[in-house]
Structures are given as C-alpha cells and as structure tokens.
Length: 494
Image (cartoon, rainbow, N blue to C red; front, side, top):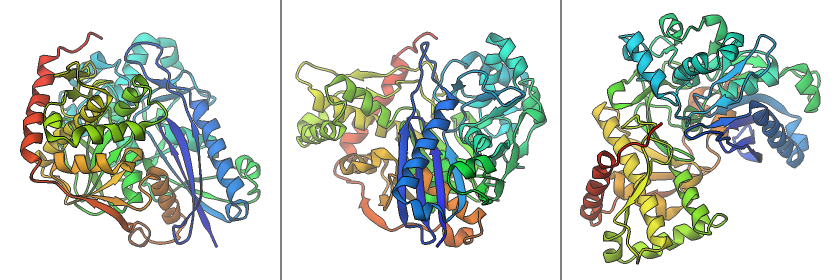
C-alpha cells in the first residue's frame, strides 16, 4: 500500500507526516529551528537549519514506520511564505534568509509604490516589509556585494526542494507572496521584477501545487533507503494554502482560521480577490484556477508564548490559559480586564505598519497573570476581527470556517474567537497537523493517487464553537477600547 510524505518548513520547526492511501496518519516527526534576531525588527534563519531539521523530521518518520516508508510514492512540500533565500551561481546560500516577520524594509516598500505607479494593480497586493520583493531592494542597498552574487531567490520550501532534487521550482500560491507574480495570470511579471533589478532567470520555474515539479535526487533517495526509485515531488504550496488543502478548504467560501506564530483568516475563491489598500492578500491557491483572500495578524500564538516566558509559564502555556479562563469566569473581572494590543512584531492587516508596538491598556495592581493572559487571548481575537472586516469589505467573507494550527488546541481560546468574530468555528480532526498534511495531499494528487475532489475532502469535525450573543455587547465595548489604542500609541522608531 503506497504512502505519501508531507514536509512543512515552519518558522519554529520543520514537520513531516507520512500518510497511507486512505490518508490515515502513519507517523510524524518534527525538529526545531531557531529564529535569529541580530538587530531590532530583524528576523532571520539559516537555510541550512531547514535542511538539517527536515532530515531529522523525516528520519523520525522513517524510524517509526520503516516498512511503510519504503512504500513512498509521492512527496509534497509546504513552508512559511515570503522569506528570501539568496543563492549564488553554485547554489550556495549567500546570507541568512530574511523572514516573513522581518520589519526592516519599510523604506523599500514606499520606493516600490513610487517606482511602479500601478504596482498594486499588477501584483494585486500592496507592498509590505514581510514580502519578498522589498527585501531584495534592501539587500541591494545595504549588501550590494551579496546582491550582485545572487543567482536565485527561493522561498523556504523551494530551498528544501532544491536540496532534495537539485532543481529550482516553486508553485503559484507561494510565489504570489513575493510581489513579483501576476496573480491573475499566474506568471512572473517582468515590470515588477525590473523594479527590483531582478530577472526571470533568477526566479524558479513555476508549476501548480498539485503538479509534479521534479523528482527526489538519486543521492537523497539512496540516503533514505529508496535507491533506484523515482519519487515525484509536488509543487506544494505556501503554508496557508497547504493548510487549506489539508482541511478541504478548496471551494468558494471555504475558510479557515490558523493560530500559529501568526494568526490568519483564509478564504478560498474561484476568482482573484483584491483589496490592497486594506492590506488584503490576494493570492493564488495551491490548486489550478483557484485563488484565495487572506488577512494576517503577525502575532497570535506567539503573543501567548511571549507572555508565558515572562510569567514563569514558559513550559506550561496550557496552565496560563486555564488561569485566563478562571479570571474571565467572573463577568465583572472580565469586563474590567486590561486590553491588549498584540503588535509585538508590528502588524499587517489592517495597518501594514512594521513599527507598530504592543501594549496593555487599563492595567492595575490587582491584575495577575490570569488577567494578562485573558487580555492577550482577547487581543489576538480582536486583531483577527480587524481582518474579518477587511474580508467582508472585499465580499470574500468565509461561509464556513475551520480552526487549524497549534493554538487551536485550546477549547477556551476557540470559544473566545467565535464570540469575538461572530462566526461558527469548526475544529477538524487532525487540526494540529496543518500544512504538512495538506502538503502530503498535494503529493498524492501529483502522484495520481486520486483527483483533487477525492483527495482534498473535508475532514470529520471534532467540535464546533458558536458565538454567544449574551457576551457580544461586552466584547463590542472592549473592542472599541482596543480600536482606540493603535492611533494613540505612536509607532516605535525604526
């Protein structure tokens, strides 16, 4: 019986899952990767760490299911979007990859909009420091020797593909986040590339996410015990598009809310949706003739982890959430809780401000760790509500919405999100697997193990979280306080 491998290059770890033909999880593995912050607002990773972590994760899978691993018939890849990986003509990494949550490129974003008056029309998106294109302008200005040696620019999962196969290929969903893609036509845009002094030759080839992009190299196949086998590698997808594939959000109106390092609201569409002036991300889906609208809050589960590290709960985030639940059980205490603005690494939707800062309002001596934890959980929910307002303005609000990501393990937080957003939220089976599971599905389709309709079905629902109309007025009043905080807090200097 054939098996299929999905690998996701995340910000905090690389995950691998092995599925059988019925999409039953056989084994999974993961290995951490470190985020480097050498200067304020910088966020980088060593691409070699992605490769090492991927090898460890796959080795864990292989050790757990050695016989089933030998039946591998297809591989799919997923990864964090936008992160710029620069290679020289010999395929060597020139510098640490600049990540999606790096905020150094504000000046370059403004320059791109000035240089190309119809930039937002061409790219269907506005410029943001996290995206790939302004990063290359920054490198050209501050590291001209490295820029001059750059022969290829790859996204994280595509660097992993290069190490697995020796080929330079990307998919439409991930490439849409570079700001160099004509998202409607699904091809590179020479005007957008020229604005960054880049050429098509420096870009990877493009395929759809469920197409065969290349094959596992003989060297890697031998190392994995698959010598002589020609294993196809699917185009794959950006982490959010892959997560959508994993939970069957592939039809118009199908959506999900992801609680990972960042928070994401994603809606699948059968047309390109664009509202760049409100920082809506209008990207290609990982499947042909499908697109998606996406809004992003840069700090989600990471905001809770940050608080946990400051309150002696670094290894007990669940305990911190329980304290929040106990605090908020008293309606009076909940109403008087501090309000948290979660812009720990700046913000995308709706402000597009890398200099935006976080903070508590209404903090008093009687507030304890539980009060702070509640404020953080609620503040992230408010940030996602800002994003939902943008999707509604683009006529792209989700008709159905599932929960994915590590943060979705908390039933309390899920319920709070449903209350703040006014949406019914479904928790599917396997929600924690996320993008790696979707990547494996893309590997199945590429290997012709089934059609998109058969493979990318929706999972069983484990739990549903409904809005509570009784709590709506209090939450609306608290959100009004939250909305007043951003203009009142002057952005920190770059």
